[in-house]
Amino acid sequence: MASRFLIAVLVLGFAVCSHAQQIAIGLGGDVTSIDPHYHNLTPNNNIADHIFGTLVQKDERQRPKPGLAESWRPIDDLTWEFKLRKGVKFHDGSDFTAEDVAFSIERTGKVPSSPAPFTIYTKQVTETVIVDPWTIRLKSAAPYPNMAIDISTVQIVSKKAAANASTDDFNSGKAAIGAGPYKLVRYVRGDRIELARDDAYWGPKPHWERVTFRLLTSDPSRVAALLAGDVQAIENIPTADMARLAKDPSFGIYRTVSNRVIYLHIDSNRDKSPFVTDRAGKPMERNPLKDVRVRRAMSKAINRQAIVDRVMEGLAIPAGQLLPDGMFGTSPAIKPEAYDPDGAKKLLAEAGYPDGFGLTIHSPNNRYVNDEQIAQAVAQMLARVGIQTKVEAMPANIFFSRGSKLDFSFMLVGWGADTGEVSSPLKSLLATYSKEKGMGAANRGRYSNPKMDAVLAQALATVDDGKREKLLQQAVEIAMSDVGVITTHFQVNTWAARKGIAYTPRTDERTHAFAFVPGKQ
Image 1: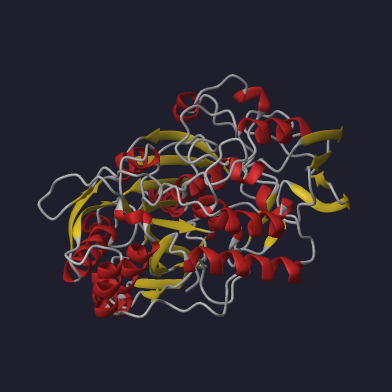
Image 2: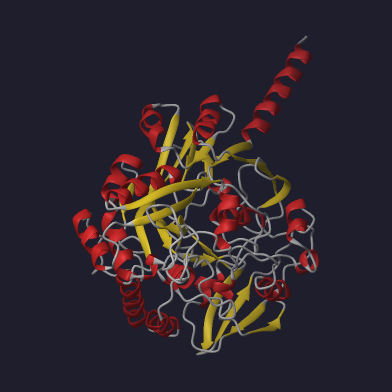
């Protein structure tokens, strides 16, 4: 009997230990691919951090730190040298070398049908020079001070596994061979991603042997899964549930301001725009969104504080520019546009639209916190100044695909600055679209201002940080004065975890399984 009891205790003990090393986490954003170079999207990049890895990593405040590269330095005005970490193995046991780095950088520009390519971060690399297996030099045509921080966004894949591989090969797991702390076990589109710890990982060993990311883009479903114990942690706590969860001693709450700005793209380029009509619903021969007075009127019509207070229930900050105050390149001269409906009507009249016009705002309904509700609020605010606005919301995978095809006239989007400075949204959202230059990759409104482009280009070639920051501030001021986009608010990032599991909140919204720590709270 004693032996049976001992066996039972041992089995129970093993079961508890095994369970303790598994974690299920509910994600609020959909993951559109495992291919780390296919779609520059925060949920995708988050998963890629687990499987692949970058030369330069970033801490929770987006400060750079060594990753697959142990060090980096400029060796002349046009060349950066990266010393790679020796002894790193990919998940298939093959060696990580400079060949994989060169291949990964080149691949970012060759992924078919990429809806948001990473070329905004790699176009500056005009040549890669492999000095030896653990030393690589990246050359640029002009001095490029952001080389290390930009390259921190590029996940490194195995050349051996990914050569000639398609995005589907990554999604199936066939080509998803990285050097990250976790191996891909299974990706079920729209449902889950399962990972297993790589015990040969070069860095600190994560606690969790197995990780399941559940794709719970429905807010009620995500909270219900947490309450039921189906998942042990969630990201993006719904604003309506924050107070309840914060009072419940069964959970810990973690939050920090986000680098993500929620904004509105405006079709400011085409003479005719597909979802702009007169008040009777007929297409207009002249696109009013090309007129800066109209764009300025729309900005004045939006009550940002009301969005923060009523839609976001306080979990946001009104935005007048592309990053929160104090981040590199933001302008202290820019404040959120004051709510001024009378001023908006006056500007519309000056532009020749005293009776307004018709418009449709398109929005995702499962990507950003309260995205569809924000779109509804914006539509109502615009209607009050005479712009009769409809809302069409849809799942993110459809929304982004259509947005990249320029199907929309006015769309609600978000942008998180992976580099932690304002050059990221300037290059992606507001620079004149150029596939060849890798600029404006996510400029779905096709805003274009040669003066802003010139200042931005000068900033990107200025090594002196003080001078570069002033140029970036100048570029922001030009773009925001021109209402290239309309910013509404910055999100506050939130996580909830069951008691006994702690998390370090991040400005970049990443939900890293290896950063959940048991036994502390």
